[in-house]
Length: 246
Image 1 (cartoon, helix red, strand yellow):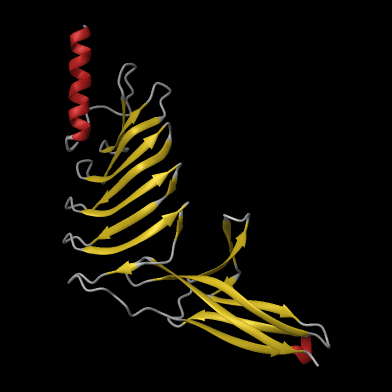
Image 2: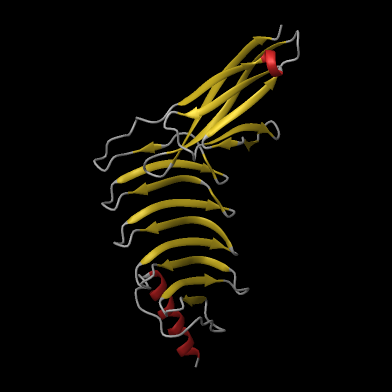
């Protein structure tokens, strides 16, 4: 009996890490002595195979499948139920679509995306699940893309009517999905993003100036602009307000 269990474990390990392209035999099964959990869709196609620890938390590699139950959709590494380490997504043809990393369940480090042909599409960096500035995108011919939308700022003077200045911020491509944020210091080493209200891709920031006072302030903010290739371009912008409310 011991030999049969060892052989079964070895076969399962080879199945998981060697391609996993065979179809299912039974519905949602979990064998007491197995290191893997296999899940199936309602139609019987294989959904995923997950390496688990003794507490049944994902630990090691989890392989997800396309709806055919044969072609690998993604491979994600886990540590006691949390994403930790490399993660890869695939096209149906087997070519890598995206390669990224996780740390404590959040995206971390360099991410690369590819065209179906295998040519590099984009590369950018995550820090604590946040996309950082520095996106690089390429055409399918390998050429670096440099033509991106710009941030536009329009100053609206409402001092006489409402004692305030309004900054209207928008992207030149008029994308309704553009997001804006400012960095708020937590301590000397850390800052967090504070997202600003926006409607249809336009953000309005209001600054009150009491009568007889002067406002001389530099406003700094960031914008996340969706690109034509489906990535996020993070750009910074600063604007100096210098007005007197007479």
